[in-house]
Length: 397
Image (tube, rainbow, N blue to C red; front, top):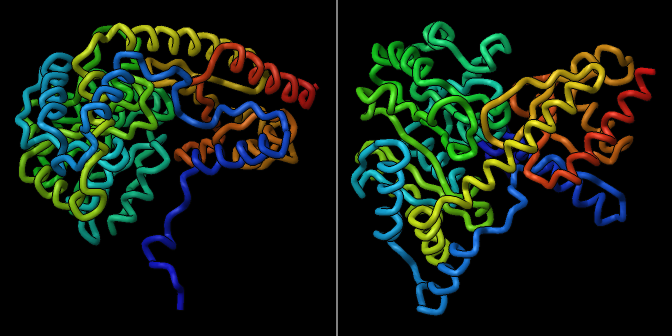
């Protein structure tokens, strides 16, 4: 008899975490490794945010908070939604968690039952399908085709919905593709969802502020306000404010569902860290020029990565409008090789031959691709691309 539950037996470890751990192990052994695997900004948390945390410590703000977050942080989140998205929420519609990942996990546990299906558009963030399984539901993978910029269409959605569908996940800007849904695309999806009243929509907008597309960023609710009672928006401070280790995520949604998620969190982690919450207040309420500076630098890195990858034989890198990942197809290179069967073997080969750590596209539902994070300095990125170009070019010569 297995000592491990069936729920845990059916899931895989996080591909990004495993890749980064392997790279760190090799570095610890003295090997020269350039890692493009982890989605973590290389910037320091801005000074005014750090100072707010120090002040909280000095003032004794180190005790448990309310399960769903401090009143100050919830008001800051409400203000952020009003300022950045033109959306209005009440405090009872807000839940603060230990990162956006916990926000999503709370949602899945609170909403899903055995036999429910969750539509997960691919390419997807690697954790979505396994978190759905942990909630005793089934992921239904819906492929976003390259000709549609790796986004699902209204027709795709209509053909996938069934009586078991309970939730649709939309991630924009996308991890890993960096693609962003337009307001019109959201509206077309919403017109399909109107006829399926039991289906909720989870909008993962953690990369919202790392966006450089045409026009202002638009949330799903901007396009489909009539679906507000079925929409949950997940966000956080990790990516936009370089606060990954502070572990503050949040969501906004229907009051009854948020109450259920609060119950889930009360029996798992209770509340997010008090000092981190004070820092998040400063992040959301304070000056936003730091966000703009980091976004501009990410865009500069993207432009370099996009051009440099497309200059490598057998590699095709699509353009994107946000996040900090390049998601090139190496299928052309793989097709030219008899010794590399897929992107999984390619990542191991690049690690061994070039000393570059990447994440296989298969982990995101897109075989033949690699995800390369450009949340690192230009010198680092240039070294990584140089190594990849050298080993690929030599092998094709």
